[in-house]
Image 1 (tube, rainbow, N blue to C red):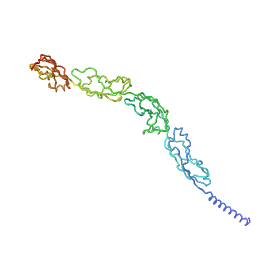
Image 2 (image 1 turned 90 degrees about the vertical axis):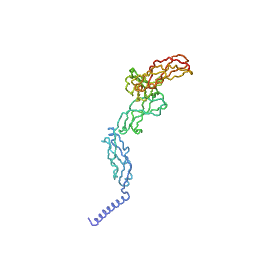
Image 3 (image 1 turned 30 degrees about the horizontal axis):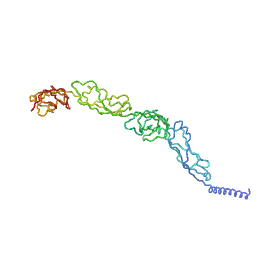
Image 4 (image 1 turned 45 degrees about the horizontal axis):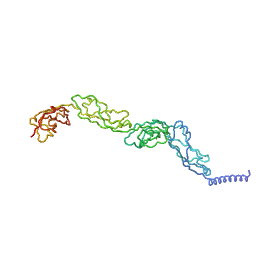
Length: 404
């Protein structure tokens, strides 16, 4: 090759190199490499059906998002839209609990991924559970005075609820609310049920097998009546009941108006009076009529009796020991009659009678309307708090009244 041709080839190669350099320079200046950040890019969930097959649901996050940064030539990067970026997680193979799941990114070939975060997302998976829950009745308002509720009947008594385990477990009560305002008759209603947590708030997101239940609540009238002690058999002759008290002396009963109408007292169940000897306080049961019950079924009735061995005691008196009443003016009792004697026999508990003296008895002779002459006058002795008079011998005395 001639020297001239050789030089011409060299110049051409050199020119090509210069052209390439100039083109690269121009391209770098006119279409430079840039980066771009996409925030809150939605993450798609793949293989979600595998969770459903295991009866799992995602508790959180409900709407996972990431931030991603890409790089590339400006003319390519500027054409990239958020929907051109695919962020996804594969949900297959996981079980109940909290799990970090890796995020996969796919971008167009003209750009590259500089960075993204988070690279793992913490998912919380829970089992869908089904549970039977008992329905209870709650009330709103109040009955008029003198009325009370009976035991409610609910149909059905329980319902099935279904949802994520934690939500189902948060349900502490399944409640049917019934309004009591101005109710005086039995209540029969169909009402919705609510799911309540321990704070009394509604639980949402849990499905109910049914939303309505039938509720029946009897409404009873209240009446307060005295209690009567009912005993059987007799005390031995040397014993007597000194005092009786019933605590409470009255009790509240409930029933339908027609059943209560003719009930004016409640008797105790018959109790052997001899069983009470030596006992101070005895709890007794009440003999309640049919269809009648206590307002407070836990209320106890206690009988307090004082049963003591009795004793008799006899005192001797003369008319000088007696209070003469209603003696007409100008008359006196013959002095010989004042020495006439009689005796009074009393009976009471031994502890009381032993302490009594003859002066503790009040004896009167009433001469109302009697004139001068001979008469039979009747003696009167009053019972005391701790004894009773069982005999006066003689009860009538022959006396002579004469003028002063």
